[in-house]
Amino acid sequence: MSRPAFDFYWEDFPVGLVHETGRHTFTEEEIVAFARQYDRQRFHVNPAAARESIFGGLIASGWHTCAIAMRLMCDAYLTRSACLGSPGLDSLKWLKPVRPGEGITFRAKVLVSRPSASKPELGLTKFLWDAVNADGETVLAMEGWQLFERRRKEER
Amino acid sequence: MNAAPRSTLYWEDFTPGEVVEIGRHTFAEDEIIAFARQFDPQPFHTDPEAAKQTFFGGLIASGWHTCAIGMRLMVQQYIGRSASAGSPGVDNIRWRAPVRPGDTITYRRVTLEARPSGSKPDLGLVRTRSEGLNQRGEIVMTMEGWGMFRRRPGDPR
Image (cartoon, chains in turn purple, orange):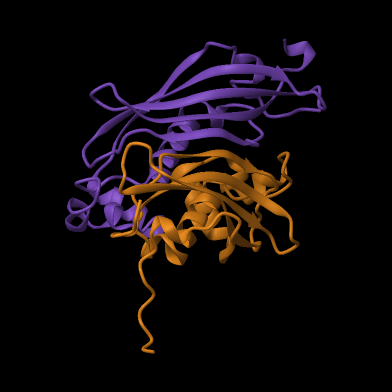
């Protein structure tokens, strides 16, 4: 039986691997557009009201930062991989605000790699996905799992 | 008594053990695809035909989409009228069952704990478990998040 060939299988994500997934500059317009749809708090949608808030100005929704991290991850490796989705994340930390005009660099680091206990053709990989601003401060840190197909014996 | 507008929610208004329904949302195929094209373009989220050949046997919503809709409903139901000071993060996000086109997900929150901030006397932290259940009562998503809220002005500390 044939199956689509992918560039990356479970074996291609060894512990310690670091992959810079990309960089994104958050514009005020897109911060407001995302938040109007999904997270309409005043410090995400209203620059004037945001100045009076605890944050002193507009900041991106944390879910927006996560969504961009996901997009960059897809473009960097995931859509070329034999990925079967994710059972979830163990932790997600929004460590610093992301403000309009900030360029954020995202990366993926492999923390754990293990074969599936129940399905020998699959493997699980735990990643740290983090994001750093221009001052080198970590703004986002997520630890979570992705499920991949393993290479077939004859392909290993 | 006058019908006063619903008042601002402060940290003191979150009681451990309370269970509150947040709202419900039906995920249409076109919005699943639109979200995923923008943020999570894996074939099982963006291409109904290709999705049939995958592990999932059909199109499913991005887990981030399920979270984002949960956030929208939380803001509508309570965060939008609260003295919210944002969130430091979320633990244990679990996407436990796929969300498919036409599924209606009901979201609810359970207040797990509430404690004053150690460093900022005018703030308190609330830990909440949020859950999404589909129309068959299956849990599709759970997460445990921290919210920061201002304390009610004038309350004794």
